[in-house]
Image (cartoon, rainbow, N blue to C red; front, side, top):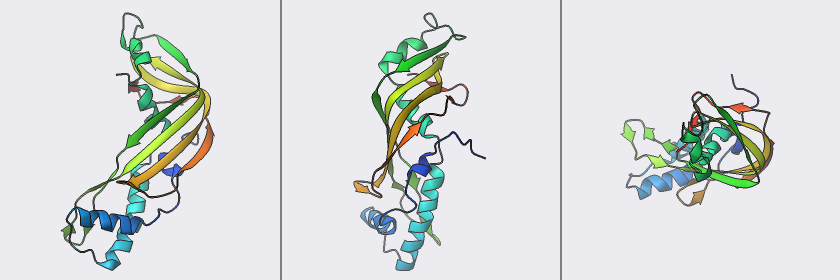
Length: 185
């Protein structure tokens, strides 16, 4: 069961992708794969849609928070002399943008034939108007109330697989990340 307050990356994607079957077929051919039967191309596109959604069944804010985890401004929170492990700090963030890219990989197999893996690009951008992050023991453990808009773009190489969609999201009070949280680097 999914927490209703969690925004999943897969839910930012459209129900179907533009020309996914032909894009995958073209990519496989560029990688040296032999001819793909036409009946298989459509099935590959359909199965790939399901596989992409499964791979992106992750919390949008956990993905975006990985960008905060490398921010220079937060590095001091990794020093136990300045911030003891038991200390909980709330850092307020003003207006800013944060982007991250995930790389889901499709592995295609038709019957006994395995094709080269295809690496997709999933770019996620959050434009935050206000947010606060919770830090403890050198880890981001959660996000406090704020609001933002989120843009998601899935592509195969330079080929976008859907139009960019954006929607405003109000953070639902507090989002907690799995213990120990996201390590600040």
